[in-house]
Image 1: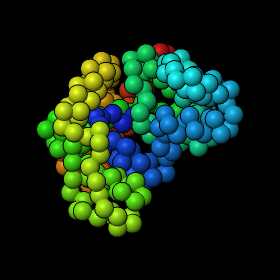
Image 2: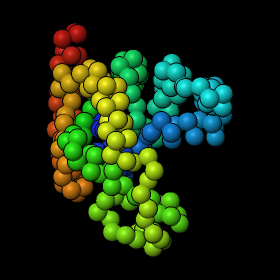
Image 3: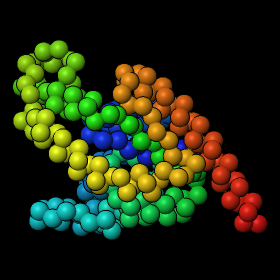
Length: 228
């Protein structure tokens, strides 16, 4: 049965890194909205070209267009065994549309994992982020003074002052609290402590997702039995 995973988490929670790591270990595609748009434009998907036209005009891509792009991406054969979604859904309406897509696929339950990190730690991570002055590589507050990739000097990011970071987190929490509430009551929703070192978070994620997958399969079996 397919392993369909959504990773949620605030900026600085390590969601993108953990999503990529988990997807690679399980042999699944890691799909972000940016990846989908780039692929769709490259492959000339009609709906992706609609999104490109909107962005070229400086407009936001609306939910309906974004859902259509995700639907097209999840039709690709590399998702038959499942996928890891990073950055989608962002709204309850997108989450409702994704439920419909998952139901149409009939290839396994949807597992939702929220990587939870206390705000003080998020501020420390984000306000301490730096960027290499030579190659642009991102670095965290604990990565020393030289870039791991090229040895260049690490400098602070202009948009990562503590005040800016706290405002970004307020916006994130306002936007995502309804989404977390939408998923929280499901047997396949889980929360993982993201305030640990990356390897410990990865181990917890792997065990948590495996447990949620089993719960999801049991729930699907119960629904089928009830529908007979």
